[in-house]
Length: 250
Ligand SMILES: NC(=O)c1ccc[n+]([C@@H]2O[C@H](COP(=O)([O-])OP(=O)(O)OC[C@H]3O[C@@H](n4cnc5c(N)ncnc54)[C@H](O)[C@@H]3O)[C@@H](O)[C@H]2O)c1
Image 1: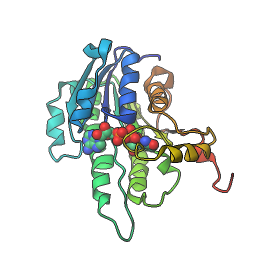
Image 2: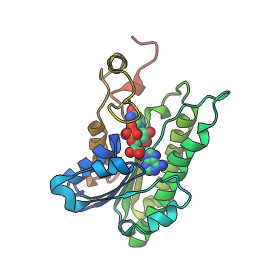
Image 3: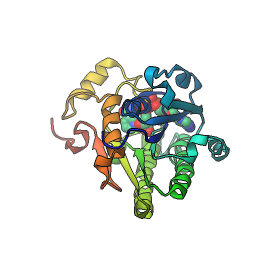
């Protein structure tokens, strides 16, 4: 893809699932990739063979109170072209009976993501060469899901945050966009769904199956590339058509 060779990329939540596929895709495109994740075991398992010289990683919990200080210690942060805000959590939430996870979800999906973004924006701005920031939202910005109140709200907030950044930093050549995945399998979030259900749910999607992490990584790489130079402030759905289907359609 145009313009990714030699670019410096940070991927949050890069140890597993969609983030891991994004790391692999950028490495295949010739980029220099820095993965951050709280999962030390997952990070250790990452092995990028021939690309090892262009790959580094750091164990960081983006929701930790000292995350700004931790990020300041990472030399990579001083020179970043592309940030993929992929780290996210989905926990059960009920408006009446189970409200406890609201703060936990917002601490990662919003507060942590904002802290990383601000650290990178500071360096992108002072460097003056523009950049690209990509948020991984969800089909939850198209639909409300039972038990998903806090996750739904956090992903909507991400879209608002992304748009405000697109407006504020577009003039500095820093593009902000989002990819909204549909049902993606396997990742740690979806691994627990029984295969029978994956097949049944998959059949209800216009492209009748779950997507794979690599099918999200491709559009993320395109969005970061020079081919998407005029795309700013967009949320692009990569969901096999899930969000265009009326619920009463067979
Ligand atoms: N899987 C799906 O169907 C699906 C659909 C829509 C959107 N998404 C979104 O895609 C993104 C990736 O999810 P996934 O399905 O690959 O899940 P996953 O759990 O496999 O990967 C998420 C990664 O983020 C890391 N992470 C979580 N909290 C963190 C923290 N506080 N600090 C640092 N790292 C942290 C995890 O350790 C993990 O490696 C998430 O933002 C999720 O909301 C997933």
